[in-house]
Image (cartoon, one colour):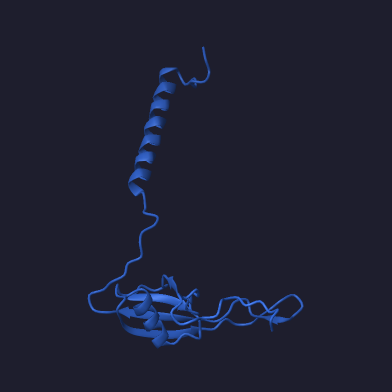
Length: 149
């Protein structure tokens, strides 16, 4: 036993803790396929997580007030490869619909805003340039501008 390597020093009362403990769960915020009310947020999480775990995770770590949690498990089926062996391409996961407390809403940020105004301006500029080039061609008797006389 004397030659074994210990990873952390022994804990002595009064000494500062040198260990950091992370939660064993993860949650991924996903955009639902269907439109949901503004106070409902969709998460993807491991199957082992319960509704109570999800509620505690959001309240304790992120400070979000949760009114209700609804979950269902998304089962991923087996597939077969070219040798007719069965395999599972992905693990199963749980989808959680979290209803926020009264007065709280969530909206996904618009990371890529549509630039319709600038696209319309570009189209108008191209049309203007094309009209000018047509006018120049008419004034030169149909001879293009690149052909010097």
